[in-house]
Length: 425
Ligand SMILES: Cc1cc2nc3c(=O)[nH]c(=O)nc-3n(C[C@H](O)[C@H](O)[C@H](O)COP(=O)(O)OP(=O)(O)OC[C@H]3O[C@@H](n4cnc5c(N)ncnc54)[C@H](O)[C@@H]3O)c2cc1C
Image (cartoon, rainbow, N blue to C red; front, side, top):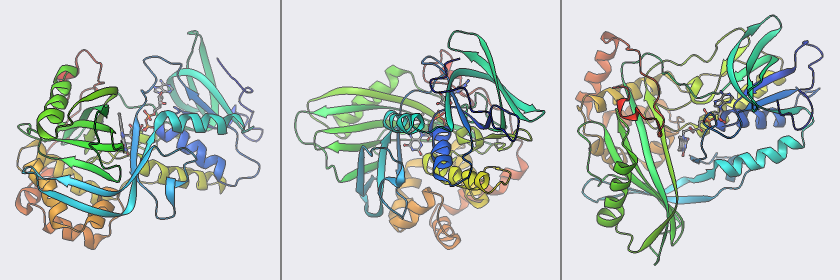
């Protein structure tokens, strides 16, 4: 086991290797550690963070976008923000421009920058130990919880922690009424001429050819007048092949929103589960799940990053106060109910996805929509949004949910999986 600093500082009062073991150094794991370091607890809690060596178990790099907190820029992340936008644009299926100035900026942070910033911070924190290993099992033990796995050389290791937070991405999803996938591939492009407004994020361009059920759209996140991340996204039951994503991106950049001459400088591909299945946040007396594994991903949007920040702050506060650190519910029940209805309406083809989202932005105040997507809307805003959506298909979808069985889902496909086209229906 690679322990660059010291072995996990024994947590004297618990008889374990560390007070807190965090499995996975991705968005949720590192955000939790960041909040633990920020939270005042005396003496400092000892923390061990386990991350696999470079290879198939490690999550690929990605970009995270989210709305800034009201309290200030950069959401206090301590990591450089790659880009930020005040103006948001949504294009309806016929090309209608919707959106406008946003009360809060939309920020992009690259995971590599976040990890680098956190690496430096963790290296300077005596209470934190990094462990390189692939975890294969997590469960309660006599004095807390036990984490076991194999190190970079394939040797077994085990760690004990008073509390364990497990963020390993779920391979299987909980039984659900509806499971769709948000899947996408994006190009980082450099154009020969100025083609982008760096002050405007083109959040959804619904002029892309639509799948039979579900939704497709493209988005354009400019970095400079000549550089942007251009991504093609679908909400649908099956992934595409790389060739199909590339063809959709070519169609978009040549026919729908012509970029002229350009080069592709990088690519990003991913899949985010969209499900109304119920994720368990507690997996044992001392074991909790965080991040996507703990249900932090908003079913209707895939947004996770901001929720993870809010949840981490609350977990860290509970630990500092000596309370049992059960991660708080990531999403309000009523948001989950609205999301479940939308997923069902999309999956059955009862609503036209492109029309639904264009209407959402056309008929509602932009700040209400953004608060809703970010899980911060008030009930009255949600009622207004509900009344301005296609009422009957949504109401029917909501009403029938309790009558439908929750079906087990297949494994979450990964972009490179050979069976990626057999995703859950
Ligand atoms: C390409 C992409 C782009 C996204 N963009 C956005 C966005 O713009 N905004 C947004 O809000 N959400 C976005 N999401 C959704 C979500 O925010 C991210 O997936 C986010 O990274 C989820 O955080 P997490 O901690 O749950 O998972 P991860 O960030 O994947 O972290 C899991 C960690 O566990 C580690 N791990 C895996 N297996 C093991 C093991 N066996 N033992 C130990 N460690 C292990 C991984 O290496 C990783 O570090 C995006 C997702 C993808 C895939």
